[in-house]
Length: 559
Ligand SMILES: *Cc1c(COP(=O)(O)O)cnc(C)c1O
Image (cartoon, helix red, strand yellow):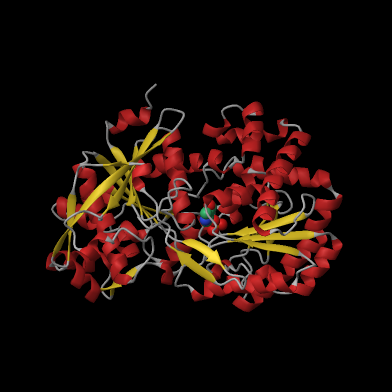
């Protein structure tokens, strides 16, 4: 059966550009939420037969493999992988000009196939091509590696090279969707192919921004731009649409896209303040339901809610599944995680204790150590009802503050040894994420507002009946109903507090809710806990999934 959508597009595709894509654990071309979201986008597009083609860099040496010593010092190892074990090398070759060199680009094609019969091809651009200068062969080696110059070269390859490669491969493109500003140079190429007609290019481009703070947007000195691009006409275009001081990739994308969106309602408002005068819509993120549901719940949903994977709205009917079967699925997922923790660390965690999880990139704003701010209060909570904590996450190799967070967690683990079991698991990746978001009881999220544009790991947790306990930022503002879908941490949105006042309010709330609400509910009011599990699935997962998100992109942006 042909999809109507394919009829409308007459063989054309939506070209989805992303610097990172998290397709599967063995393909290490992602660093965190942005890449995993791109993977979920592709998986849902494939299931729903949305005619999409994705473009990214091959990142031959991955992001990095994290190892930690006994003090929590992170070292990074190269994550070598062999694209040829997963994908096909294409014959076509295109090139881009960098300085005075023609840099040749080839591509690998990976097909993301769905059981529904859908398929999304992913084009991995590779500059490791015979004839290229040695330094150019490495442009597509390291995801988020190197200096500004390296990054700009990557963006030239992704944006300009990506458009050329799609043409060379014979794709007819209806719209270009930029997942973050890294690929915005594609609009430069489109301008050149369309007689510099900005109206025409805007009609072709969609831009999704993910960064709620000024400093997070990629910007390049024009001296660097001039050195790498060396074309007066191109520079003139970049300055006209990308800012006069520095080349701002997000601004460039904003000025050349008819449809622009943030990744949650709150984030689109924050972005509108950051870029006054632009109309910025909201399409709230989601996660791929099947991918992020543990095998134990998949089996249960298959039996009671057949078709749920391609129609996650069906999860709204979770109430029809007997509580004891849901509890058994929860126990099995928890056992799988705790066994893994004990195997890796010898921590001797048990299946009964209330288990709290925190795992994400170790970026400062995510505040991994907030719950460890006052160990005395944590001890008091543990005396009321036992708790155990599981952490994981990589710090970017050049992020010293992020690396310090890991050391701080290790120090607290040491201080609380023999009192509270806490572990930090090495090398957070998609596989470990899937185990953690399904195996803990409570998923903790404590970002500094408004830095968490969306966040998605809490949505994964909800798919597994894991209860969210989170600062009111990003997606949680839309998912949260106090005591019904989980709990908030700290001030309501409308309360205007200074940074330090907010932090203290958050700390108080964090410890108080653990002591007075979460621990007693878990140990003494199991029926209430069942309701929270049910509501996480029936009121969060049914909505915060990438099938709903992609249907939105289709009706609001792609058509
Ligand atoms: C989902 C996921 C993330 C994103 O988590 P946030 O809580 O949104 O920061 C990061 N890394 C991995 C491996 C993931 O699976």
